[in-house]
Length: 424
Ligand code: GLV
Ligand code: MN
Ligand code: MN
Image 1 (cartoon, rainbow, N blue to C red):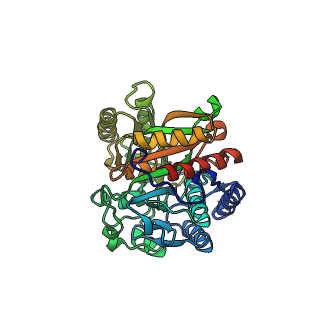
Image 2: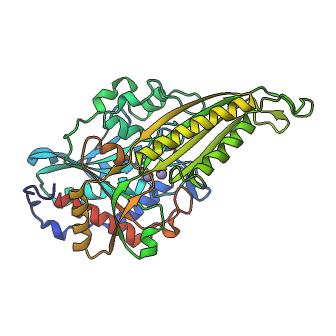
């Protein structure tokens, strides 16, 4: 922590250390080729492309003289050999996630992991000795795009095993157990991947902002003060399939009509009713999805976010009540499950100060801001002080192929990450 007696990193002077910006940008380009298509990147957690991407990063780590391993939860961990020798304090963990949404951007998550690798390699090449080990992590399945369990890897690491399904399946019913094994994990051994409270000096995550604030204000560095709370709900609707031309309108049991009402109601909750900050239905699956058949069943996923846990609870309750009313009126069977409940978290004030001081020393204009996106940091906050560094997103967009950040800003963020690690 910044106010503990930081053992100055041994020679060379830590303040003269610099990230190799060209290598950082080149590595981001190369990683984006894995799962790259239609201008975007698709490396959904535990897909073949994701496994390939993780292996690629692990190889780069090993080529750099570092070690790479995968824990039972599928998290990629990169270490400096012998780095723990001088440790008198618990490790500092730095990183983000390597998976993406479907047809997402090249930076969300990947940037934080590649920058963490660069920090480790920079420390290693300079022979820096510190009183804490620094470990880089690529968290598994942060997005939950294929296996609907966002924050999977960080939940395992933080020991939230009770909140995870025992035999998770992807949207098509394929078991996570097999996919996890292919990625080097082991569903039966998740306990071995957990870290206890107090076992880390801090967790630091560098990420693109994914919103417009830094760009609008002309700031290079964002110091994140809080991360939004989030509830993810999965809804299943079962009606009665039938012929679109011969089944009378009267008495139909159409789950898609109920779904449409629910989607509208979810939006209204965040707009007219102001029950939560944002509310989204981003995924709908219709079966059999045939133009001249009344659907048999619909699955949809709801994402609710707010910085106030009480408001989130009210919004969740309202969704359940609205669904029950709509399902009754439409004569369809409905089930609903909250698969992620993540409370809003504040980043650690001392870590925040250290990030701010690092940015100031490097001469970067900075702003303190909240995060509307979810991050592994909000889960790791269960067991460690956390901090997050943002860099500007061009046009404020993310989860889309055109997600971009200026190269200089990408390098600046990595410099701030490096300096913060040295100062912690
Ligand atoms: C994570 O990417 C999120 O959905 O905020
Ligand atoms: Mn994301
Ligand atoms: Mn992310």
